[in-house]
Image (cartoon, rainbow, N blue to C red; front, side):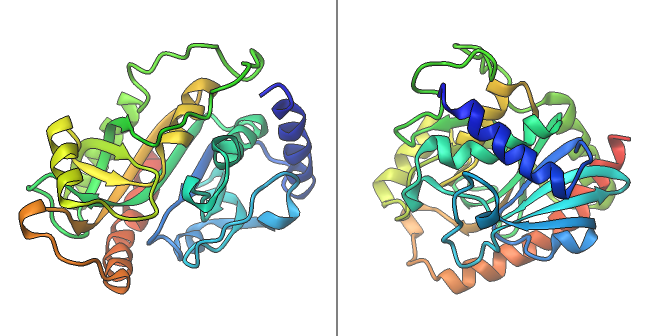
Length: 274
């Protein structure tokens, strides 16, 4: 982690040459929010491959660029597509953009994802406001010698998801008449989906939804002192006794439907931050 500081500075200085405004919010857009950046007043768009030390997105549905501008008058830097552990990147690489967002000046991390619904009360395309998580990825982005300039050796994780932001999201969903739950997200490495026995285990552990991202970024955001809000779209129902083979095309359609809700919800939340 000691060499990480120099890489962060190099990447942030490169971005600042194209967008010299300190963003208040850093956003990571997951599956289903491909058109969301149309709502941003864009001042700069930077492909990941141009940014020093940024990984390359290998997931087809993830565009792979940093969009800089304003949303509702608030400066933002937005990742169109994230990086995943299952792509073969290290945890430090997966979470590197969060470090850069912090260095650029971000105070808040707003991240979205697609997930499988374990809670039997959830339906397809429902929104879940994540209020806690379980890390089953078998790794942690903070492993290694700690750089105290980036954060404390042993960051507290009693409240990684900001309670005030969660309440804002719940109130916004209520006003917009969007069905939104609060729930526990469990992160697994992927890329395969889970077996029936694994879904039973995850439910017993207290998980409401399951996915292959988000937790590493939230750990780093907490380490860096960022306030975090995470929103998830339920794209498939994971009932062990009625489990059906996954159809990726169908999941993407459901993600897009849920993404339409998030595209309404996120600007409403941001408006409350003014």
